[in-house]
Structures are given as C-alpha cells and as structure tokens.
Length: 349
Image 1 (cartoon, helix red, strand yellow):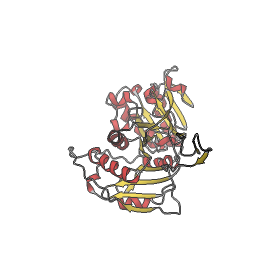
Image 2 (image 1 turned 45 degrees about the horizontal axis):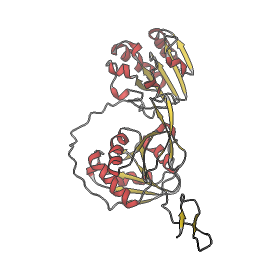
Image 3 (image 1 turned 135 degrees about the vertical axis):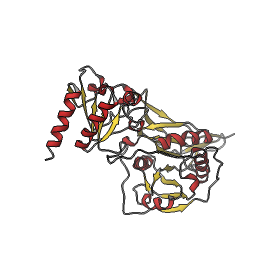
C-alpha cells in the first residue's frame, strides 16, 4: 500500500511504496488571483478605491478590477491604466448604480465562482462595509476587515479594540474576503500600459427587496474629508454649535483644510455626522491634523493617529490627545484659535 505526503502548492511531494523506491513529483495547484471591487461615482473611480488596487497586488498573481453600473465601461477606461491591473471586468447594468448589497453581493458571488478568484478586496468604506459582509455570508467564508498590512497570501494585520492592539490573523478559507484601510496603502498610479476590458456575461439579476428612495448630500467648496491633505477637527471643548460654526470654518479656510469633528461633537449636534472622524466615522491620514478641543478618546485616535503631523489645542495638559500629538498647545481655544486664524490669514498677504 502506498503512502502520500502532500504540502503546499510550492512544495515537492513524495510518494513512497513498500515495493518501490521513493519518487518525487509536483502536483498542479490553484493559482492566486485577486478581484478588486472598486467604487465609482459620476463617471470616476473614487479615491478610496485606489489603495485597494495597491493592496491587491501584494498577493501576487493577476489582479482583476470589478466595476458595475451604468457608467462601468467609461470608468473602466480610467481603471485600465492604473498600475497593477491585469484586467477590468464590467457589468453595465443600472440595477447596480446604487450598490444595493441585496443585488450587488449575488452578482459578485457568481463572478467570483466563474473567475476562480482566491482573494476579493474592497475599501473599508461605507461601500465595502455594506457589501462585503453579505458576500462573505453567501460564500460561507469569514471576512477580514480593516486590513493594514498583507504579510502573505493568507496572513494579514488589522487593528482591534479601537486600534489599541494590532492582531495578525491567518485565514484558512479557500476564498479570502478583505476590506482594506485606505490610509495604510499608497494609491495606485497611472502607467503607460493599458489592461484589457471585458464585459462580464454573468449577471444573475437577483431580486432586491430594498428600494432606493433618495439621498441628500452636503456640498462644500472645501476639500473632501476622506482625502484632504489638511484637516481641522473640533470637539466637545467648543461647547456648542454656535462656537463650532464661528471658529472652525475660518480656521479651515485659512489653512485650506477640510473640517472634521469628534463623535462627542457630532452627538452633541455641533456638526453633521458626515464630518465624524474616528472608529465609527471616517479614518483619515492627512499631512496635517489639527485637533481643537478634542480630549483624545481611543475611538477618535483610531481614526486619525496615522496622520503625518498631529497638532492639538486643549486647555487640559493631561488630555490623552497630547500623547499622540507632534505639537501641542495648552491654552484656551477660544483665545488661541482666533489668534491662529488671524496670523495664518496675515501670512497670506
């Protein structure tokens, strides 16, 4: 009777028999291939999806970008020029314009099975958080969320406990489903090469029990909070909405920065929840992050501690925000912020 010893796809296998000498041979294996599910709007791929492509290249093997919706083909022409893309797969159907997970996830399931993908990645954004958990359930695999580092094809690093600890996890699932923290990977850039664009023949048109009614988006001339290079955020120390509106916009305009807020400020009604920075808000990593009247709870730090330079203004010298700040000013913000704004504007003249 023969005995067989098998290992990983990169190993040489041994077959031995009581009556025969040892023989060595290599078994065929499943090649690595990654599907990068990208978010787009208004005929353009969104900035938070660009780091997803970079992360997808870390697995090795081919990277296929996936786009669905009415303008998927026009967006595909932009994506095809990005570094690391092997092919762009599109599904041009208006049913996916709003990325409703009830219909989008079944679409992904069928295309993943057809393409034999080993990894599926998307941004750790509202888009990814909405679709990927449903996709994982349909595929009966465990999702790995908010990945900040890819060590190999099965081992990943992600923050836990609001960023207070870092976990290294290994997945044994045949298909790895991940959401990527955009600030942890550089955005993909354009190259001279152009990947092939292919319209998928797989479109299950799963019924969607949810109906899209409308959306109300706040418009601003300021930079987008998620991609801005400078961010000024206000916290509970501003005391009320009147002070927030009086102090934060002029400071942001003087710096050319986006406006953010702590959860305490949002919960108190100082700012809209679209401006919330933190574990349950947006994760940002600008060149400059200026925290005004923010104590520095761990939930807030989880959303901004990767910023290049952190500046804090707080009258409490023991506030936790000073432990992560590169520069700190212990002062009354109601005096410091107007003075800082005035000097910044004077420097422009």
